[in-house]
Length: 156
Image (tube, rainbow, N blue to C red; front, side):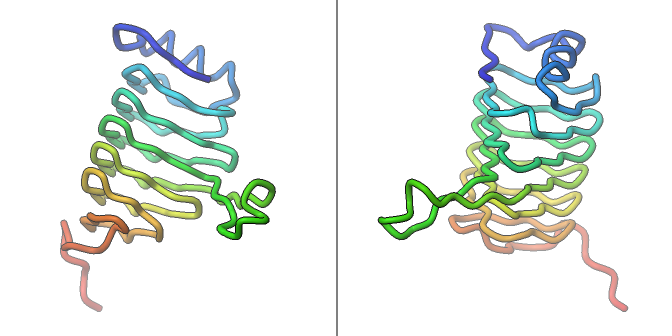
């Protein structure tokens, strides 16, 4: 489904529309159009902000925690294709994506199948996340790599 318009969708209108598609969302979500998703196969927590141009390829479940911020043109892709030329068009693989609470996904970030982004983490603009990110971490690059802790982990 492609949501488009010149202004932010009202929280009430957006919530009603997305619930009709099967998505599980809280009424406090803000989406700046355009916004594209395939199936409505996602669950969204409280206070989530999705900036313009975001894409959810949601063949597998996408779970988004509370107070997550999406920069413009962020892509969550739960589907990938085989790299072998003979299987590329027929063999796709699917895996869920999980975004923890209080995460910031910078403009143009791409999150690939099977990735979990831990709570309080930041993914820098234009990063491609190919593997899971621990909580409280800053990741950047293509492929995204650890840069520093946002909150130092407790030593045991």
